[in-house]
Image (cartoon, rainbow, N blue to C red; front, side, top):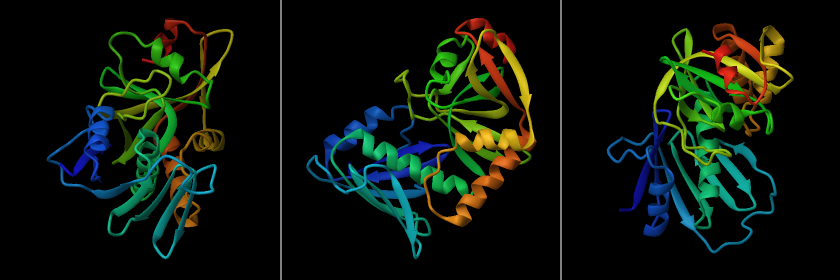
Length: 262
């Protein structure tokens, strides 16, 4: 075996490596999202190097030059070509670098497909998906833990959205947060977006127009310095709030909050 196909949001990415232990680690880490027979939509070659600083960038920097995308952070360096759907990453044999690279690749691909990666939990109930967005500490993990037994968790950390006709679909992801639990690899139509905040009681308040767009954009994961793609992301946020209701959800750490959701 020289590669593992990791399929998230119905986008199979083939990750190649000469190191069988690294490939085994990927299979175990992304259990439920491995699709051996899927035709790859993107191919990523991984070159493993000894642990240590690879670039001087402390934070993730994503830039483009003549169609070549460059991702740099202290622990990795990746080059991507979106036209040929190929890339190469230099990193040590750890799961965190490849995880970050996959998130960025998906964010770039989604930008051109009317989709978004959002710093949000999401879950399915009664056939519909619900998104819970917020910065760290807003309550994504809490709302996930409070979910009743009939709720299926798609993610407690990074939600995957793509436009489908007049609406949006939410997909499960393996990008886990504090729960350290992979989401279920399934999809459902997005019924509502909730902006989380802790408060003295459980309450829901509609958020519309510019305020809704601004709140969604504050939670979108997108690092690329590219005006065209940034414009696409902004346009997608507008289309999202026009087709899916957005609410401010103030809540206590009490399971009864789910009575307000679905």
